[in-house]
Image 1 (tube, helix red, strand yellow):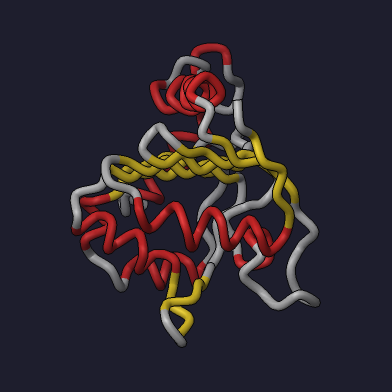
Image 2: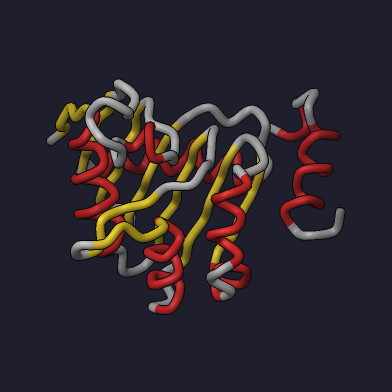
Length: 178
């Protein structure tokens, strides 16, 4: 079982730059906070949602599970890539606090970093958060992570949850009905 502990800038490099763009089949992202996030693409910084749109164009299945409405700048960037509206499944659950990235069921990150520039280590050394987590290719560990993610996605916990009314309101906002 190979597990590697990573921190700060390594989260950005090993997860966002090395693994996420290489997804072939699916990408599941879980975060409590979702704000604008820019990553290196050659010599430029581009919105992370551009990477997601390129994955969607390659028909990679993308699930995005988050706890609250995305920040304004993230939504503006998201709206610039219309393929994401149909090419990304989004779900809001106010109880989600984990941070995960699962790529093709063969690679996973789990740790403290939200899907934000400061969280993922994309900002400069003096402006990013102190974060830590682990990456793994261990199939048993990834299966357990996928089980938690998918259980929330399927609504396995909704029956006993006392925040259900918030979920419906957030889903309406996400789907543009409010």
